[in-house]
Image 1 (tube, one colour):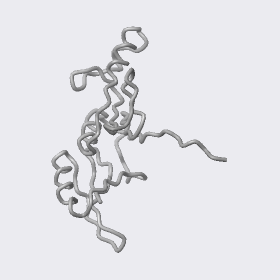
Image 2 (cartoon, helix red, strand yellow; image 1 turned 45 degrees about the horizontal axis):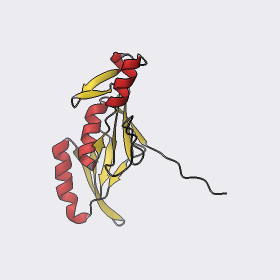
Image 3 (cartoon, helix red, strand yellow; image 1 turned 45 degrees about the vertical axis):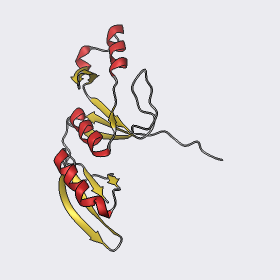
Image 4 (spheres, one colour; image 1 turned 30 degrees about the horizontal axis):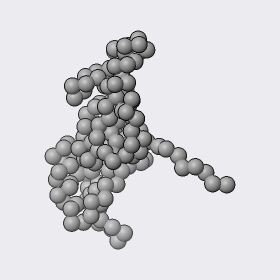
Amino acid sequence: MTHTPLHWKLVIDTADPHAQADFWAAALGYQAEDNSPLIERLLGLGAVPAELTVASHGRKAWRDLAAVRHPDDPYEEESGTGLGRRLLFQRVPEAKSVKNRLHLDLHVGAERRAAEVERLEGLGASVLRHVKEPGGEWVTMTDPEGNEFDVQ
């Protein structure tokens, strides 16, 4: 029996979903999702209270959620929600306290690695360590909230 492939998104817990979305949009070349048409409609219907929203980039956004999507992937125009490669950042009350059990690998190639690490540092990332093993070489970094990722 063949199973239909599932649609998915990677959800990342965060203290500041909008700052994290801005970092990762810049890091990956993704676009921040614009949910303002949906939010404005729901506010107008009285379906959600204004306290659940904030202004971000000059438009209404969810206070506790922000997402970025690949610019070439489809999205729902009425909600702004991406339908392809997507990262969703959700506010949680607790800070990150242990090593990630899941992380992103950014594949840039050996010839671009140093420049990419420098660019990511300029966006607010930090180098955690340089790794050189028989199986490969990469730089482990952390995003502005301390989440680990590798630049390969």
